[in-house]
Amino acid sequence: MQDWERLAERMVETQLRPRGIADERVLEAMKSVPRHAFVGPGMEQSAYGDHAMPIGEGQTISQPYMVALMTQALELHGDERVLEIGTGSGYQTAILARLAEQVFSIERMRALADRARRTLEGLGISNVAVMVGDGTVGWSEYAPFDRIIVTAGSPTVPESLLEQLKDPGVMVIPVGTQGMQELKVVVKEHGRTTIRGSGGCVFVPLVGREGWETE
Image 1 (cartoon, rainbow, N blue to C red):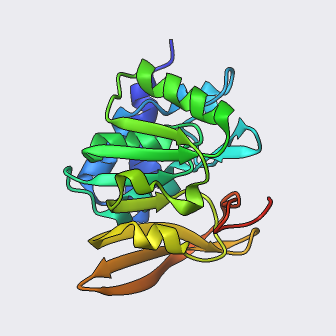
Image 2 (image 1 turned 120 degrees about the horizontal axis):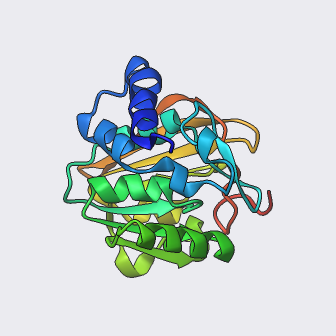
């Protein structure tokens, strides 16, 4: 039988700590969430590798380091309501669920949303709501959100998401072309919005009314 806990520990110690992931709550979540449960059958052995992986429907589960980097940038303390755009496999969702009070996640592909729901429920994660829809316009019914994370590359910061971000609040979003983006950390505070870059990245396109029209 594979020792998944050992693989998760190695992932944290060799891929995350050496690259500057220092938030112990994030590192603990990365250790405790079983990444292999979110990949396809027969791909479990590769789940903890230093790379993204396909999950079907042309989408991917992000590299562990990128998941940790984006999560750390959110600066979660445990009492936040988080909006996630792009549920995908549900792995990032599960990490957020360990670190925040409530996670609201939007996925435009029903097959992925249904699979993610089943996986999350199977792991006993209950503080997550998953909706099928256009993530670029957010989830106004439950807005505003303390934190927003976007796991797909957008041409700009969608205005609807910015409006649904609390003041104070933080949004992490890849912005750029369909082939290359820069990870942006958007901070709303005292009525002002500041944006800083946090390195290059490559995500699948954010498709929707305030994103890309097509992939």
